Image (cartoon, rainbow, N blue to C red):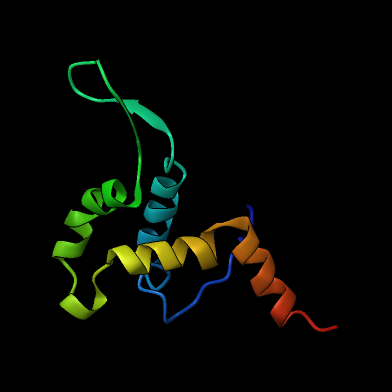
Length: 96
């Protein structure tokens, strides 16, 4: 079993729930991937807005102050998903 080295930040709307965190991180894996739109004539790259649309069922069950917004998704990706943010986190918490 692999242990995660990703920081779990209780203030982050995404990190608070492990199941939501896994789902969001899986969706973030698709960010920037080109997909063919209906009709097959145009390519579109997956964006935060697309991911947020996919998270609408998750947000329906949450109180308004706990809903995942564009900003909370972007901040989660920057601080807790992207490798640079993870490295920064661990360099701050590890003893020198």
